[in-house]
Image 1 (cartoon, rainbow, N blue to C red):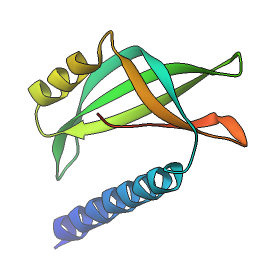
Image 2: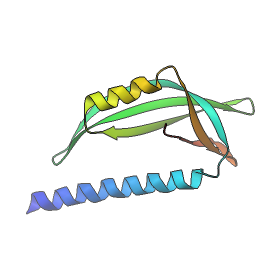
Image 3: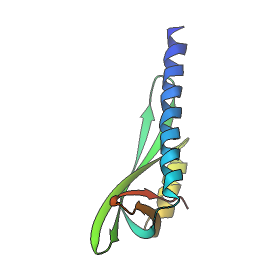
Length: 112
């Protein structure tokens, strides 16, 4: 019983995190767009008591009005090969992102 409650708590936390991320991206649809560069990427294995997945953590940089900014994003995958393939698809390519006009340091990478 305790295991089921713990698993439910983890699932609810992940759903809440994904929902807040989705809301941020929805708001970002009206933000100005620009190009950025992926600076680094790392694929990590994540294990909890109830789940197992791989997370791609990436850092990117971009410029707005001559000022440089940076951001991070994380994307989860079921397998390490999916995460690595996605990372390879980003390597050496410009990425599209949106930044908040009132605060150019706030940005969201747009999925390709």
